[in-house]
Amino acid sequence: MNARTTHWTEATALNLLRIVAGFLFWAHGAQKLFGILGGQQVGDFFSMMGLAGILEFVGGILLVTGLFTRVTAFVLSGQMAWAYFMVHAPQGFWPIQNNGELAALYSFLFLYIAARGGGSFSLDGMIKRRKMVAEGAAPGMTSPPPADRGPELTEEDLAEDPEVAELLRDDEKKR
Image (tube, rainbow, N blue to C red; front, side, top):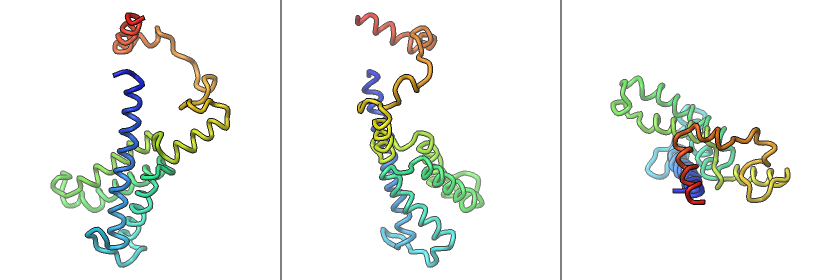
């Protein structure tokens, strides 16, 4: 696979992961807040379960749209870590025994999304592209102009990595 295909595949996978996780999390919030989708509605929106429902519902929508993705995912990661340690961990050490697999998985999934961001197919990505165009970057660029990126790496720098060195050799053979 070439670099362009790899980049496209990774970008698509990140966007799909964010959208699907946000949608599934939104459904948890909808269960708690509205009692739909087989859930039971919480009686008090100002209780811990009510607050969890609000975070899940609103946070899920924000993740699906990709708006404020990093902050939202970080908050939701913390919420799921809190849920794991406060609700599930007292019932046993292993997540499979204490029914905490979803909380643990969501916590680390959201931490990953917080680190990576919303991806190119998100409102955050659209805002970033518009801002870059306004700052003078070409419309097709995905990063600021070269002067803003720092020092360029030479082929010698890149060749220190064995995989990159092999790719460079293959590229030279093609020429």
